[in-house]
Picture: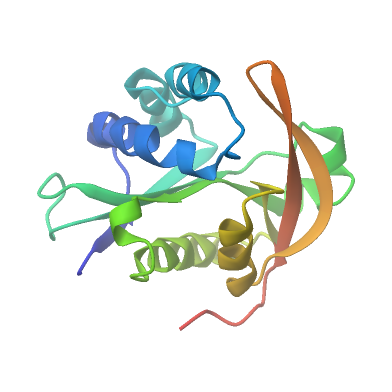
Length: 187
């Protein structure tokens, strides 16, 4: 399957929300209540929230889409980078603050798992981070999401700490993974 990787625009807000509604539940532990997952998606991954993300100057989103023209095909994967020091004290203790950028979101539609499309959008994101002079990329991943941990490790990330993530009434446990710049690109 061929995909075009590009920076997301304001016109992608609806499609990003639709993709997030499919992909976010896949990153949650099986024990997570579906009602709490749905509430999180509504509060944090709606079309309106994505429109805010896309207008925020400290965020950049990349998408993988079918087709070569913007809006020509469905979105298959996306990343969101946040160029701001971490607000979580557990994260701030293990990353370089202003010299680090967060890979806040990296999700691929289950139809394209294993095709390399997620890796392509991740590599474009890592290349963007390098061009903008950041020394580290960091992210949080649920401690039970072994598949995602393997994906991130393939891209040079390593576990350096932990943090908590509130999902409804339940506190989830995430690993903090860091990737120093200068790693070889993944082919």
